[in-house]
Length: 102
Image (cartoon, rainbow, N blue to C red; front, side, top):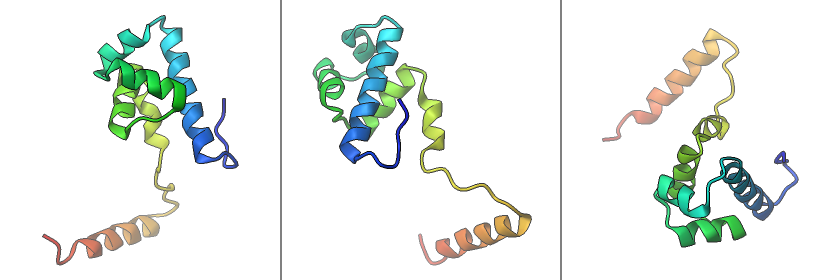
């Protein structure tokens, strides 16, 4: 199941819920077992698997319990730096954004 740019947000959410369910079943865990390991209430997990609705914090807890947190690394990743000059420009821009803030 590959997420594509043509999918709607609700389709992406549902696909993520199906992935979590598939990982849970692959480990032969019940919803109660995953909920216990992730510290997510069983009713919350049931709703998530059925509808895809869940808070980001709880989704991260599920990812940790399922050993899938590494997949979050690619989410909103910065583009690769192509040169030293580009890296320096990024750092300069980042430092300018900090001035005057406390």
